[in-house]
Image (cartoon, rainbow, N blue to C red):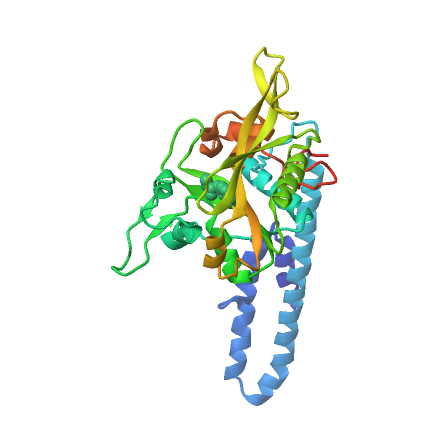
Length: 365
Ligand code: DAH
């Protein structure tokens, strides 16, 4: 083994130089490669004599290169450890965290509260057939209530396709739930709904939560208790008082509109605010309309494929965005959907503040 070769390896000052030496010796047209190739041209005796030497040489060179490489790498690490420093006194780079939108937060709160009452969460499509959105909810074609919920109509893709709309409410999930699961049913259905409306309190897309109970012997008392229990848990106040007013919805009979009592209080900025709680009839108080509900119409139960003589139930529908505004104090609905980072970081929730009943459903512990 000629020491000259090993000297060249030892003399390589850095990894790059070492690699050139490796290529010069072991590469395709390297010196040792050439020797290995020359074995092929030798007669058997010469080959038997030379081969072990050449192979030994190649092994020695390979080992020497590996050793040198390890030594150079260790020296490089030592150099970096000695020269590079981390300044712990510098301010940390800020990482931008997303936040949970108040609408998502409120939907999680609703799911948590109703899960505790034994309700599951149901879903339906946002592009809905007119049959589910209107007809099966006892709004036949030409029924005036269809115009009250004016919406976005989709062009049929084929002449005989059933006409479809962006759903105007979450109520069609009532029919889908009955068809899919039969009875009994205890379900809520939160989701997006659409109407051609736009001002400070109406956006073309908004959110509702539907509630549906179908069982035997269900009456208005069950509806009132459920709404009261839900609203007390949601607003985290024991003094929530409800007022039920007769109303009309095609899909319920009887229908009730539910108001909640509030007090007018003046805040530190001198502006007066409405705070939910107490009877709306008390001095300085008032009633605010909160949701629509009623006993599910017999026809709707039939459209859902059930026998209305056997099964009864109640249903309700609430605006989720409105619940969020009332609970968390926003006053312009349009800001909900503008995507302004400042609004989101002010009103958003930490992803880790998962709503739980034991911790107060909306207040981070
Ligand atoms: N679907 C109604 C709307 O969007 C709200 C509603 C009222 C839902 C009464 C119900 C109900 O389930 O019983 O205006």
